[in-house]
Image (tube, rainbow, N blue to C red; front, side):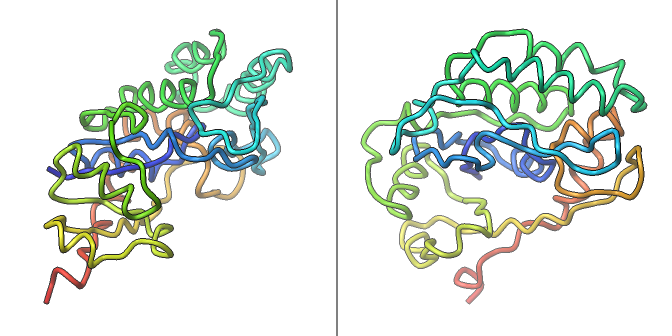
Amino acid sequence: MRAAVLQPTYLPWMGYFGMIDLADTFVFYDDVQFVKQSWQQRNKIKSPGGEWIWLSVHVIHEFGQNINQVLVNDSSNWSEKHWKSIYQSYAKAPFFKEFQGEIKEVYSREWKYLGELNIFIIRKLCRLFGVKEPKFVLSSELEDIKDSKTNRLLNVLGKIGAGEYICNPGSRSYIRPGDFAERGIKLFWYEYQHPVYPQIRGEFIPYLSAIDLLFNAGPKSVDFIRQGARDALKLDEVFMK
């Protein structure tokens, strides 16, 4: 069984969904520490002027809290502002009318926790894109996985019975490939190749929120997602000896 483990981020980029599409089980790593002004609470869209802008969820948090403990600050009226920015940016996009109701639903609901908001968005976009939906698991619901970095991750993979793990290259600083080999888990590095897709307003900007892809490419979005993920898995050399 092939697994992927990622933090639930806000309006993720298309590569996030490419990883989901490759996994049999996808773990939302929701009980790791929240980092202010990270992808956990913000992402980019293309503005009416053709440049990228941030959309940041306003939150209430204390130092050391995990993602699933962080409260959304609804008193700031952030959701109305986000929807207004999305509408102004994409109202003229080819597939905005087709999908605007689905995305507007996100901003019409009240949210208590940031983690719940992010996971709702991710699962909704999976359905709208038509990627293969794996079994979704919350790390916060797994028992006896407490440890640090690599060991904790290995405990998560052991709990779900993973034989293969798709690893984000950003984890190279602390991942110890030999530990995976000892447990019989094949380690794959995920090196997504960002494709160029039709995009309104000026030159193409990569690494935006995946709603940019949805509104611009519509039903063809899944093809672009899979194009970038087609050759993304690189088996770690420790398993090729």
